[in-house]
Length: 432
Image (cartoon, rainbow, N blue to C red):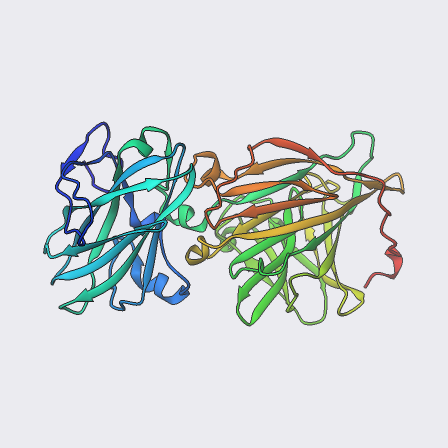
């Protein structure tokens, strides 16, 4: 059986590793689960070392003793937990493992992957936990390669959650969504208005806070690098492919116009179509406004246009307007989402607040949206990651993911915020 996966119904009995003076020796540690480090471990506070040290085989290329690595899992119950490793070291190494306030020094000197018993820790309460591993000393160039962390014992008799496969998505973390419930009698949706405010310290690298999603695309803000942030607007082609070069000419998204300084082009991998983005260093703690229009042309096509409002600029900015062929529709399937697109950042929590949602309909009136359905992606639904939440706080909706917080909002839950807000004051004819 592959060591990287659950040791199904098999208890592995090993002798504990070296103990510090005064510590209890556990001679019969029991391991029932193997947590692959490739999908469940992160270097603490160092993006580049995450790329260097956490590879397809788990923890390797580990040189610096100041590096701390955490392997995460979630427990359903509290209790004692036996901990071990599947590891090897080209030379003798000493590492320290900790869980909560308890630590254990372990020596690794096996040249081939082997089971190494560590100790028995105590889990005080259910939820997410991590085993932290830190280098102490080594005689060679590297600290051990660690394929997996082994756990067993009382705390593992309840359910245990961790990523067992699809490690790329497991490391990215779960994506979460707000699906806005449009009143049946509202009429056709021509405009969709939304606001986002990212709380301080939640503008994490690799985050996409998507404000105005619709059946044919999405529109929101991203954190792309320490020095670059974007306002992104994309529309999918009706031709289903991940390769934009395969789209027939009569099914390609056509750019009608774009704002000054806006990049436009094609995108692929998640469907294909037309993409636009504007580099703008938006800030946490500031409320930004998003306006999207979708209206059929009368010739079997539909035009989609996106505008962005930043208080720093104090005016609406055109991002882009795209024409989608073989499409006759107004705006539908209105939603927002939060995702992380950097695997190295999946251990950091981020949150977005979504405020003041309105639609302007074919009946020439504004309608407030006050009800949502909370959903999440396949990573959450198959329980590879359980650190996802969303719903309502006060008079705003919110989404939160990643970072291994223990709260979890039931998927497909419904929430409602208070209505009675003021409709946006927008002169549609005056928009750029």
